[in-house]
Image 1 (cartoon, rainbow, N blue to C red):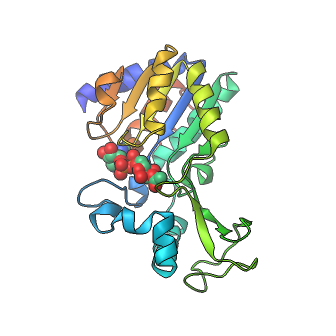
Image 2: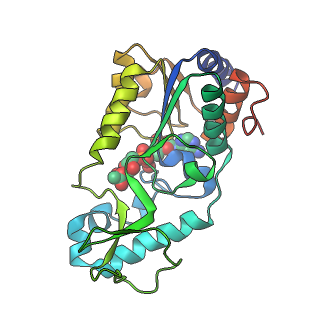
Length: 259
Ligand code: OAD
């Protein structure tokens, strides 16, 4: 941890003087809220489920019961989970930056809703959210749904079937969200990549857009990723431990940071 101490202090120095910050998070930031990641070999979702059989429009068309049941199981895990100190620290970072007139944008690949529950406001849920499901016939969206759903697959009030508002393999990401994220990266002076394996594009390319605009890149991840060699600061630690220290070091006394 000593080596990380120096990196954490460097990250705090960069954050304290940042004028425009983009944070990108992945499943790792929710790992300490007991929500499985995707690619962690032993504990990840894909250690026991084949995403190609569950997270595609074809899978839903082939077996809507199984796909609805799997996603509603994940929705229930998310509903039971609570935001961890990493989520809280990102929310505290946003408040501190906005209070100083700096820009802040959080782009999350997570569909668990924990950033919003931790108080993050300027958030793009670029892979969608499990909290909302939509009708396959009309596209109408429903977010006040019982947990668990009453049936699998679940008929929608509009006559089709309900499917989760998450991006499946082979589906496009929300265009407006991607555009807004790329524009923010093009203006960023500091970019955080937190808890993501940095393998899935276009999100994995956002760090390069920010770096191209002159931003410093900070990675927080206990493991090496393809981004690590290009990051200015690499903190090989879990986000729930590292983020509160980074934010408290940058903005002493910022509530919700170093708990
Ligand atoms: P992954 O499971 O690919 O990567 C999770 C990352 O979090 C790994 O690099 C872990 O080392 C790291 N990690 C694990 N525990 C951590 C902790 N406590 N603190 C910080 N980092 C930790 O998940 P994502 O990168 O989010 O897309 O995956 C990106 C996308 O791939 C997902 O959004 C999903 C999947 O296809 C869709 O479903 C469209």
